[in-house]
Image 1: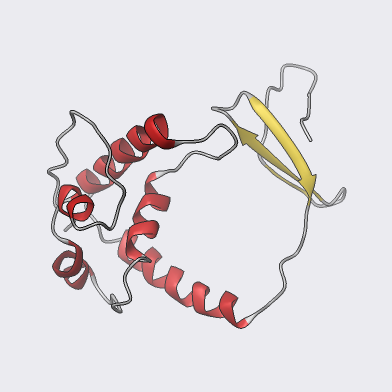
Image 2: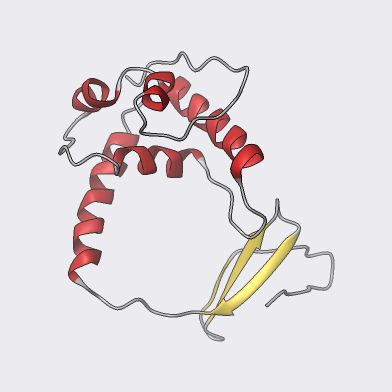
Length: 144
């Protein structure tokens, strides 16, 4: 449900534990949606995804700042071309994890990542790990 705040608060994101509510800021911080917090069930899939996301997080710590900038540009371009009205925008970390989770190869370090995907974001897109976008920006930064 949409929420309207008073006293110059436009939107907010986070959880209100006493009220058991979650606030989501959407549409470039112009709309706030609230829903009841639902604690997820603990399943085997949670443990598998948790382990895979720990690998993604460790890889993220070692990629270059320029490559992160390329991921941010990609995410902004993707959002302007493919984002549906009712969907949340993608961010650089989500783009990175989306690509890394597409492979079944166990990725242990940044060198294996570069060998598997390619050295630049353009190679990642050409290999099919990320959806194609049209942009005039040149993704030339190395992952390492």
